[in-house]
Image 1 (cartoon, one colour):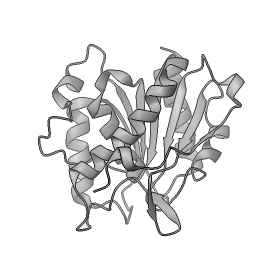
Image 2 (cartoon, one colour):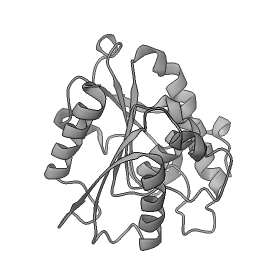
Image 3 (cartoon, one colour):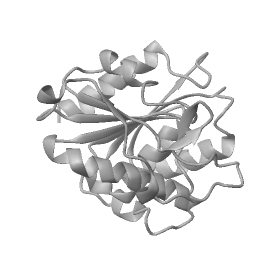
Image 4 (cartoon, one colour):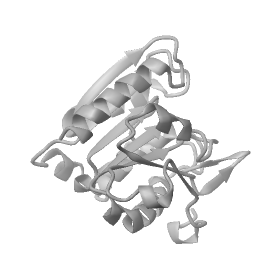
Length: 219
């Protein structure tokens, strides 16, 4: 598996010009499998404008798009591949984090798997996590996933998880694992939608805006 150091330099799209970013809470968007950094950036206009939003491109080419790691059902998938992707994002985040009072992660599908992995590796580093139509990876006791430390934080990290029960992509075993993990380790806001399938709808983005306002901006 390609190591994080061998990945290309991160490609990041921002919602604000450089001179307007510093001092504002940072919201990092992590796209799904086969997409790219443009996929979620349109959400920035629909979310609270107090945030500086950064959308990051995954480092591995996948068809016409990009992926954070191989699909979990593929023979190429390993937990190390997930950890390498997390290291890649962490390396970039460490360069921009000092400019912002807080960092929140928003991931769609596989991007939610990466967002929750980032939280589990550095539990104290994030204000909140938003997961849309995604899952958390089974860490099988890997010590790089500091779940016990996450659960013992003085203030539990809030997480929004939106999904459609008819989502044809995220398998029941992933949903079951994610629910079990989330109940023990984060302050969970879970909302189910109908007719959304494996996607994002306007109602959900409204709920995400309310969550971000309440759990990050008004803290």
